[in-house]
Length: 228
Image 1 (cartoon, rainbow, N blue to C red):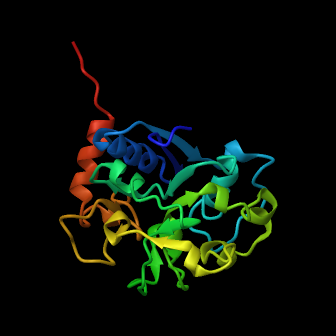
Image 2: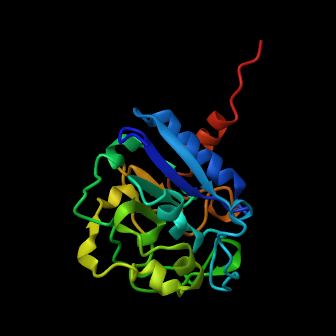
């Protein structure tokens, strides 16, 4: 795939279908470069992703996200992002941050979650490198350790703490505005990709959170059709 086409994989969860579509719409509306979307859907990965569901995983794509380099044939760059996000800026800016010195790039959050329970009553797990993997730029040729077999058998921490890399020096840093954690961080006008990590505004208890009005406006845009 050409370097000027952003290849974007988005986690898809049957509990929050609308999230995928609103996120991709927000990217489409603001992008100045061509984009290609691939949803990470469990039903599409039969025979590829075979691991059993872990009781601690909060989404259907908690582990399948790490198949992105495999699904990209270990070529070029790919972006992965959780579905509970909203793009507020041109994704070309994020795509331009790719740096071949690194195998992967992400926002290196350093925080402890403020809450114990998140959307749908799920436990808010706490671990080192929490939320680093919710938005990753994969330099696919340098991520060959993420084989299909490894992704199916590795522990959750091996995957989410980037233990599949030789060391943390292979992880490049992306500015925090490209994975800005709603409720964990104070409102910031220049946040470029906001992440409703506790729960998206499509869940009633989060409908008044920061950036929720923008999310609902984008949902309306996603449903737009011109009538006679």
